[in-house]
Amino acid sequence: MLAGCGHEHQWTEATCTEPKTCTECGATEGEPYGHKWIEATCSEAKHCSECGQKEGEPLAHTWEEATCTKAKTCSVCGYADGEALGHDWMEATHQAPKTCKRCGETEGDVLLYEVPAGFTTDYEFGEFSRFNSFASENGLGGTMIWVDGSYDAISKLDLSSDMGQSMNAYVCTFVDQDNHKWFIQIDLDYYTEIDKYEELCGHSLCVTGEYTGYSQLYEMPAFVVEKIFDKNTGNIIIPTWYSEYASGR
Ligand SMILES: [Zn+2]
Ligand SMILES: [Zn+2]
Ligand SMILES: [Zn+2]
Ligand SMILES: [Zn+2]
Image (cartoon, rainbow, N blue to C red; front, side, top):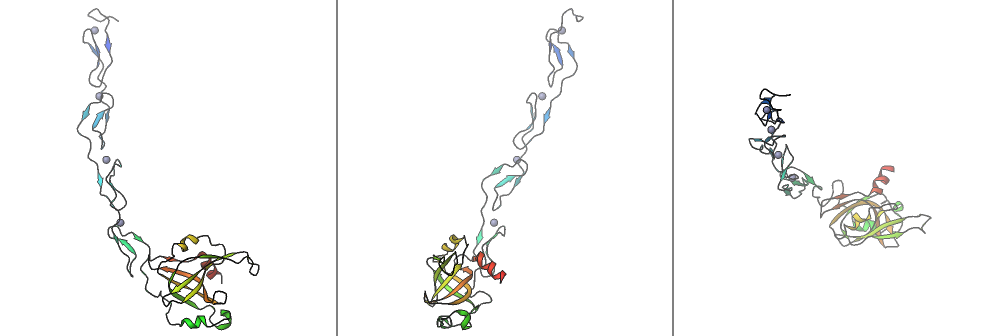
């Protein structure tokens, strides 16, 4: 099509700000497209996706203050600045476990008293050591006792030839605060968490359990562990086997 000025218009495409325009005569057709604005974000100012023109500044981050477990973080874009504060621990007491002053998170258990609740120091070691027969015959069977001391090593006792039991027992010699030795049985058979007992070697422990008789073989009174109170860490350990045994009897 020929225009009034007698030439064929040479159109340039419309842009954000200019309409379609003839390069020869400057005639225009239609309207500019107008900018296609992308809203500002934390990292970019409001800008046109077509021509890149900017308006204003990037938004400031919307900071959430750092916490024990999370760095200062922008709630809009997720950008993290710095590091988490880490917990501010207060040591465990008899009333409260190790506790973070800032967020209240706790770890472990309260510190233990010398004698756990429900147990007594009111017995003589001799009561447990003087009998050579089984506990059931001497009236001490089933007595719940506690001992305060430590052990150094756990050994595996092969009971496979004993009365047809195809099992191992984990045992140790526990030396109490009066230097008495006890033979303690941690488990009878399928216990698989022996590592956590080995980690207690040398710790200051309070162990509760059920007296099972005087072991003539080891020449020590023997009992099955019910609970171990680790005074070093405040942790309480209850053998899986024992909890099943206790609930099943
Ligand atoms: Zn033209
Ligand atoms: Zn534009
Ligand atoms: Zn941000
Ligand atoms: Zn904390």
